[in-house]
Image 1: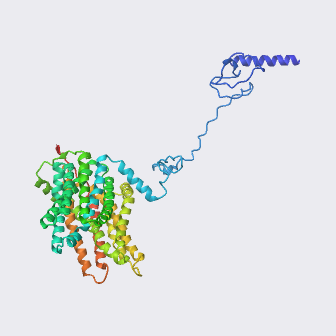
Image 2: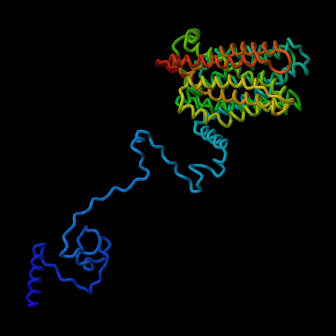
Image 3: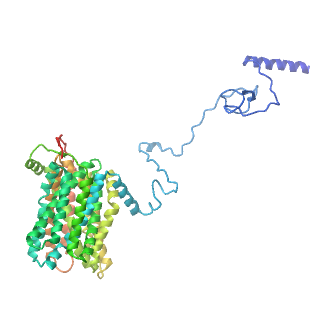
Length: 532
């Protein structure tokens, strides 16, 4: 009976196997089980239940029904952002360096904010073409050579040559007039002759003029040196800025920010080098300054590439008439004139108050040092930060407001004798003045070419510096008159309030121009190109 039941069970099992695809060979219990799949060495050594393409595992028993495959669950993404924040772009996570200090950082970088700012400055400089790097370093040399000589010229004329105050004023006035009055001529020469040639000629004239200061002792020689040195500045100042604006049309603000950094460093190093050379003789300082400009002349003649001059299609007088009748540009220039008047207070109001508050001449040197350090460390990062967040008009207005607000700090009551405590408000005013210039100036220089059509960039720069120089001279004279009318030591309150008012009124004017869309770039018609 048991045999019959076993036979029936075997027949049923064979019937089911035939229905499923034929009878399979009986299992060999002594055959080794090997891992089956694409890595099996021999097909004959595969598992008897192996099905090609199936997942590895134990074979399914014959009597158990086949299960439907379960749906795979989506893995949890812990970094998936909330649906309501999906509209905001995700910032890519920076790849960490092997030492864990962050992307692209050297072992010393990142430990101080000032070090990171300096690294950004040098990285930005190296990212520009060689022509722009040369012009930026050229501005460093220009300011070093200029401030090696000019701050000590009046003392040399009075003490060594024995000239009267009237003659000294005549020599200095001729130099200032030759530079400020010829800016428009230098800008037109840059447009028509090419900026490269004008820059080279300007540096050469400055070298000759400073050399004449070293060897000339008569009044005609001194006047000739004043005219040559002033005309040189009128030539290369608009030309350098026009060259930068054309060489970096997409990165003008960063280029002018670097320009301001190196100019500030040169303005600090020049007096220090000049004072050291004065221990030898004034002529040694004058000859060294002339040598600096001679070296700059040779470097630019060898390295600076030529830019094609672009004709405006009209005469020089027609170019000047077009600039003078541009109401938007004239309003912008008048609104920005206070910036140069306030910059001049670093040499008038702030030194007087610093010496009175600090009680030592070194307090004046601290003003220039802290102003240069702030500019050197933060100019490029601040310009980049403002480029991403503000338009040019509001950025300029903010800078002017910071400059004007800085002159309110010395009005804060500070009791006690002369010393470091009383010097803090004056140093704070110098920091805010440097910060305001740092904020506004790159965008001012970036915006000037936007007013000019093709072929008039240098002319617009020349007119801007001409008008700004005249208005700045008038503003500085008014501040000096307010200082003379005050009683007692130090700077009177009227002078501080006048400087603050200049900055705040100028900021308001720029904001109104921006609000009325008077700072938008003008369309540039196509002009013919003439080789320089």
